Image 1 (cartoon, rainbow, N blue to C red):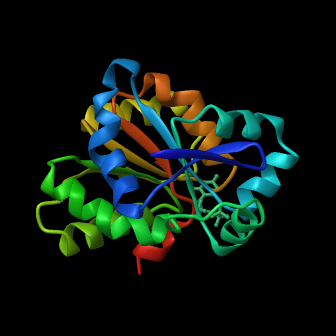
Image 2: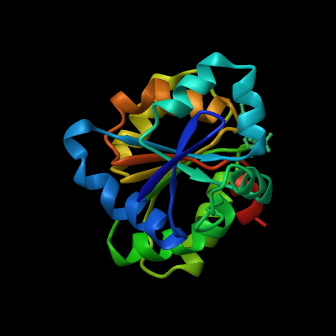
Image 3: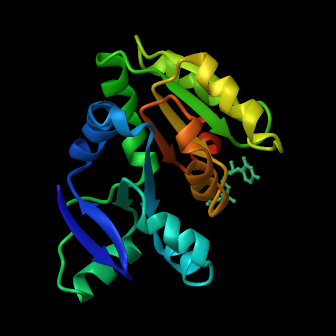
Length: 196
Ligand code: UDP
């Protein structure tokens, strides 16, 4: 993918299907490096990272950043760049579930209020025949070790982390070296959206 930069944050300027393929298949090809991190960069995370050096550093050191939102498209245009696609989590999830089902990659849903991730998991399993959801856990916990164990024991390939920004990005960065999954993707309020 072509690599670009906005507000000092590198990102992959790719079509959505390319982004999906990287999460579902490509991130496994680098498995000697362990779990790969992927984030969506939107106006909110750019704003937050301007006042949060730790978040800024995490976004700079991620394995993939995808660009999300029309505000970012405008910023890109002003910088003389054309974005291939708006790669937000909500629009990407259907393709991701489809590709995960086709390629036998399982998902773990981490985050949101108790019950929400499980409900989203049930909805997605119903909508995407063959999709394996390895597990789900709510996002209001203190014990990272216990949650990492839960994810690892589930055997999940891809972890969707919905803890809100910046907690989700910092959580992935702090824990990815302990995760056995191929990829952890920060997805914001996605489970709320898919649990209805
Ligand atoms: N969330 C969570 N744990 C937390 C804080 C937030 O699981 O400690 C969840 C929250 O329930 C919601 C999601 O994170 O499902 C996204 O929250 P929000 O919309 O505030 O974040 P944003 O999408 O703006 O980053």
